Image (cartoon, rainbow, N blue to C red):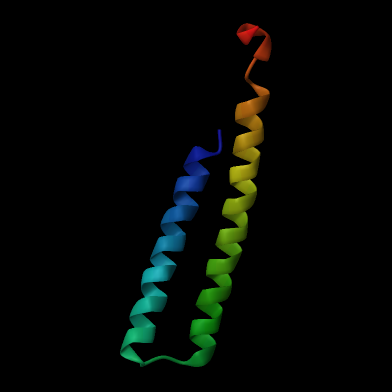
Length: 69
Protein backbone atom coordinates (compact mmCIF):
# COMPACT_ATOMS: atom_id res chain seq x y z
CA UNK A 1 0.00 0.00 0.00
CA UNK A 2 2.75 2.46 0.94
CA UNK A 3 5.58 0.71 -0.87
CA UNK A 4 5.76 3.10 -3.83
CA UNK A 5 5.82 6.15 -1.56
CA UNK A 6 8.48 4.55 0.62
CA UNK A 7 10.63 3.69 -2.40
CA UNK A 8 10.28 7.23 -3.75
CA UNK A 9 11.27 8.79 -0.43
CA UNK A 10 14.20 6.37 -0.07
CA UNK A 11 15.45 7.52 -3.47
CA UNK A 12 15.10 11.17 -2.49
CA UNK A 13 16.92 10.51 0.78
CA UNK A 14 19.78 8.77 -1.06
CA UNK A 15 20.05 11.63 -3.55
CA UNK A 16 20.28 14.13 -0.70
CA UNK A 17 22.92 11.97 1.01
CA UNK A 18 24.98 11.95 -2.17
CA UNK A 19 24.54 15.67 -2.70
CA UNK A 20 25.55 16.50 0.89
CA UNK A 21 28.56 14.15 0.75
CA UNK A 22 29.74 15.69 -2.52
CA UNK A 23 29.43 19.24 -1.21
CA UNK A 24 31.22 18.37 2.04
CA UNK A 25 34.06 16.61 0.21
CA UNK A 26 34.68 19.52 -2.13
CA UNK A 27 34.51 22.07 0.67
CA UNK A 28 32.87 24.49 -1.73
CA UNK A 29 29.49 25.28 -0.24
CA UNK A 30 27.61 27.72 1.89
CA UNK A 31 26.76 26.59 5.41
CA UNK A 32 23.14 27.60 4.94
CA UNK A 33 22.88 25.39 1.85
CA UNK A 34 24.18 22.33 3.74
CA UNK A 35 21.84 23.06 6.64
CA UNK A 36 18.90 23.31 4.25
CA UNK A 37 19.76 19.99 2.61
CA UNK A 38 20.22 18.27 5.96
CA UNK A 39 16.86 19.57 7.18
CA UNK A 40 15.18 18.23 4.05
CA UNK A 41 16.93 14.91 4.53
CA UNK A 42 15.74 14.76 8.15
CA UNK A 43 12.18 15.58 7.09
CA UNK A 44 12.28 12.76 4.55
CA UNK A 45 13.67 10.39 7.19
CA UNK A 46 10.74 11.28 9.46
CA UNK A 47 8.26 10.76 6.63
CA UNK A 48 9.85 7.39 5.88
CA UNK A 49 9.55 6.35 9.49
CA UNK A 50 5.86 7.26 9.55
CA UNK A 51 5.13 5.45 6.31
CA UNK A 52 7.01 2.34 7.40
CA UNK A 53 4.97 2.23 10.61
CA UNK A 54 1.76 2.63 8.63
CA UNK A 55 2.86 -0.10 6.23
CA UNK A 56 3.64 -2.43 9.13
CA UNK A 57 0.23 -1.80 10.73
CA UNK A 58 -1.49 -2.30 7.40
CA UNK A 59 0.34 -5.56 6.73
CA UNK A 60 -0.51 -6.92 10.15
CA UNK A 61 -4.12 -5.81 10.14
CA UNK A 62 -4.80 -7.76 6.97
CA UNK A 63 -3.47 -11.03 8.40
CA UNK A 64 -6.21 -13.31 9.62
CA UNK A 65 -4.62 -15.05 12.57
CA UNK A 66 -7.54 -17.49 12.82
CA UNK A 67 -6.11 -19.16 9.74
CA UNK A 68 -3.14 -20.24 11.86
CA UNK A 69 -5.10 -21.91 14.64
